Image 1 (cartoon, helix red, strand yellow):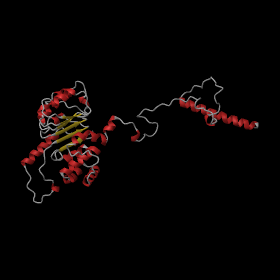
Image 2 (cartoon, rainbow, N blue to C red):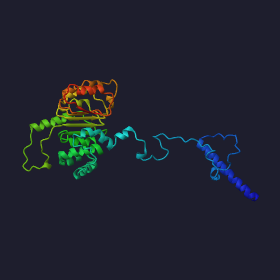
Image 3 (cartoon, rainbow, N blue to C red):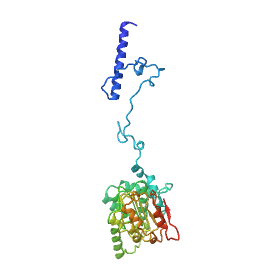
Image 4 (cartoon, rainbow, N blue to C red):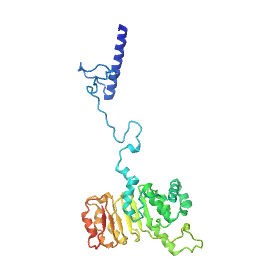
Length: 340
């Protein structure tokens, strides 16, 4: 090898070592020089030019990589399915909503059963609801032509798969304040209005004072049928205002207050407000887990024996309630089914 060729090789190796040095300094985010202690057994060539049979990885200590926090990304954010799942994300899934509603759904034709194929009318109505963006158009041009039983079915279906907004629910509940005897509201985008039950009772009083004349050409699509009273109240991941709670109609037979965002401070009044209750579901309410809260003291004051028709009580996700379990069945001939 000539002298010129030797110089070219030395210059090339010098440049490669310099690039390797700058690269290691950038990784370490350090401006200091490398250690002055020189190891004569370590390879002097850059990593990319080391012979394949030389185990360089076992001799070179690489800097530790910093693990990014879950909420920050060095580049574009990964897809949602790849991100760590939080508790709030789990509660915003159809599977979690179906499980949370499963107890009361058994008394409502088990509408959370995912093996049932939805009807063509239900799918068409769901598509129509998803495309309606105007409150006035929806209330005046769509809702009057939806029979009560289809309103009920689409609210049930959307409660699991795609919860409806508050203004759509209010339009579907109009004018009775419910859909074929049911009120199902799933939050957090929707909640029960403070005067919801008062408005519904005012309309019922007016309808009794001014009954409709008999229809000569009557069919099921006219929807001029005597409405049934409200029997089912289902609230999931939303709130129940105190003013609405104190005006609950006595016709209710099934109440599910699941994973409510705010505590209920007057639970002890429920037996007088709803004496015909058959099912009460209080599952997944964090405010019933607190040690000495006002809501727990109110729950301990409930006179369970006043509910002579009570058959099922849901306490899923709640612990340390043995004393209440004894109170529920105290003095009864037939024990109440308690689901935990």
